Length: 271
Length: 271
Image (tube, rainbow over all chains, first blue to last red; front, side, top):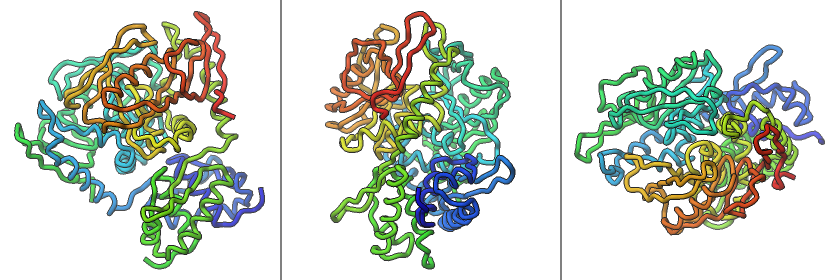
């Protein structure tokens, strides 16, 4: 390939970095692809880093050593973050979301890539320094959000099933008490799905009593693994006695009994 | 904000475009954010477009008119595409993937963001010109791939459940014959999940007899909507009598009866 201009090189570098969040990429890869000396690529990277930081669009970190290179940490500017959380609050206040049984319909939000990709950046930003091995969720509504967090952290997703599937091979199954139904439910996970001694975070749509999170802690013990963090889009702060205490949310909601009144506001995570 | 250099502007434009695939973004947004005239931004966009096309990393299209602007269509270079499909074939050939009942374990592939993000670009590339309203899948294994396709197309995801959930409000439920089990199963979809007269594509991990796809066609009729395309990661071409005929896959697999021999190769979609 002929020599490219700096303008062209920084476009290509930005594209590759944003598509590979939290992955160390050696300068050789850029050097080979863009037909430029490593010293030139290093100068390009300074430009990319500076403008992304200035616009609060993420960070580019340098990793020294033989296996070194650079990695991109997704970010979202504080104002967009706040506006995003406020928009979610507005959407949740819509009375037509209350469905029989006094639940809040939020499936449309959880399956909307424009919303979930931003929520994923906000939640994953808390876990970059924690050396997490897997993002875990329970089917079904939290899967897109958990997937986004896994993608941002550059690690695999693990989805716990509510029943055994023939395509999963041998599974480990536990019983737990669901906060939603108050009933005993099951969680199953394929034995092939996780290496022993892993650190996991649990990502979900909604936290109520924390029964599911407690179930996941128990299930992970069967895999000699550990839950090191919990992140949800919505925390039901009306439920004060939770079985887990260390978690983050994007918005906090208090659903006032049988009426349709909702109190909903950005969480402490949103400055 | 002070004036930025062209180098800095093209980085920011690339970042915003790649984060908003298939969405029309007006030049005003770039002009305001980057404090530059629209004519300057237009020149920046030419640079971004040219290098992305040269490296086969996607296209930047211009949409004329009052609601016009530019939009980014994700792409993947032909060589990476072929290598990707060949890598999937290699992974699937691993004998330890055969689980009791003669199924192939591929959950690890379906939940790996590095794999699924590429598969999502390849599958979505077929549907950009089809004016699709929703990407539809059935829980659970195909959800990350369907989500990636939805994100690339800039449209919402719809997940069909296998049972009714209290949090979904009123649902429509149909019965269908599963190709995997040969048994009658159910599919449920919340009435709130889709506008009438929508065009949908179905994305999944694996196509066997097409029973699920046929079930989705029937369910969509209940929503006065239509299935206009099907895309899967793996087509089991060993099953020759399928209930659907118009679909695309990334790899084709033939599982030789009760033995552990697999024939697996890139599909016709991969050049």
